[in-house]
Image 1 (spheres, helix red, strand yellow):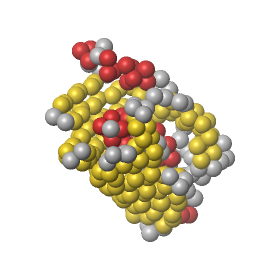
Image 2 (cartoon, one colour):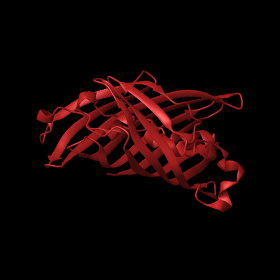
Image 3 (cartoon, one colour):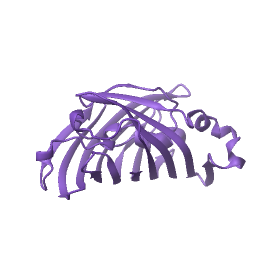
Image 4 (cartoon, one colour):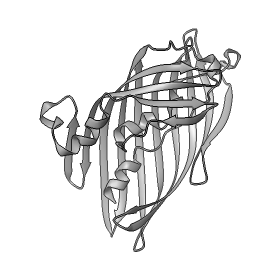
Length: 265
């Protein structure tokens, strides 16, 4: 149960609008992406209150591999993980640049992903394919929404106050996103994004069925390079609350996620 809640804290991101013909990022050029997340999960299980806190910093190489009129191919390569987790009074630290922790058993999943390109193919704002990787939560903040990296809209719409709405997901996991252009300069575009989200999942752990239902709200600010459409920075906060049900219990759960992302141009 604790492990399941820990993974959940990394699963929520917002979505962007893709019109690939406006993408001006050079093919083959690598950009450094640094993503910092803070996660707080609170749950009451078997009359016991539990809190899980996690802070992580993930370093990626971002490379645009190909562009079509309606889509693109993106490579995201994790180059370093740093993580500190506090759960049930226990603290765990991980750093793939540290020789003392690199050989630890819990590092195996991270080591398998380190320096291995994850290829994502998008078309018409939809995911066509993505390299299958192990569920290491530290990288999920980037992989769940590759659209966040590009602002691909008509230049005539890059004006203060312009708004649009889109949605992603299905009946089990759905988000509705509201976008507003806040500021426009000769070199940058600032967006404000608010998201309403609903998540309903059923999983099994040790032969026990676990149902989780969450509703939440997120706010984000993103700054983009107006010339090539590549993201410069993102800051977001997500709050969600709901219940975790098992055959024996029905427990409240809440989570708060803070994310900061910076791309070196």
